[in-house]
Length: 89
Image 1 (cartoon, helix red, strand yellow):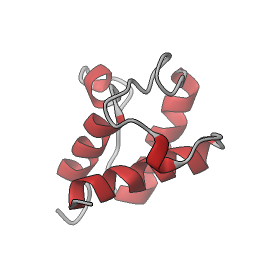
Image 2 (cartoon, one colour; image 1 turned 90 degrees about the horizontal axis):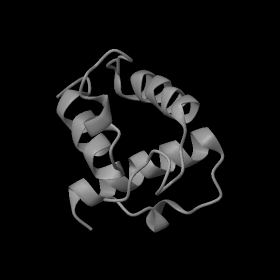
Image 3 (cartoon, one colour; image 1 turned 90 degrees about the vertical axis):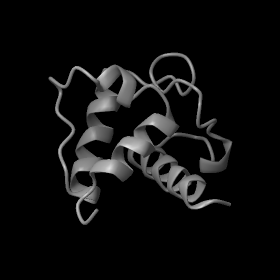
Image 4 (cartoon, helix red, strand yellow; image 1 turned 45 degrees about the horizontal axis):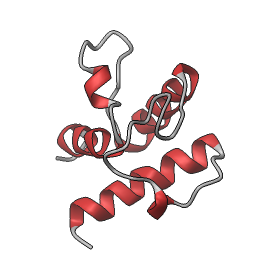
């Protein structure tokens, strides 16, 4: 498993535990949509994930960011965004 795949798995695990989803982290398709189809998340789920990511990785995901559709488009895009912006990088 590559470092980026391991980080995607870490983010998937964080989302699953935060939202109490009944799915294993390795079963989350990194390219599948997070919102509605795919994992089936709604806007409240996305807000909860954003809060936990802010606490865990030390940067804020803002609701007014025009890139949120892209950022939360899939596990892969969210993981890449976190990796690029987390504290200590």
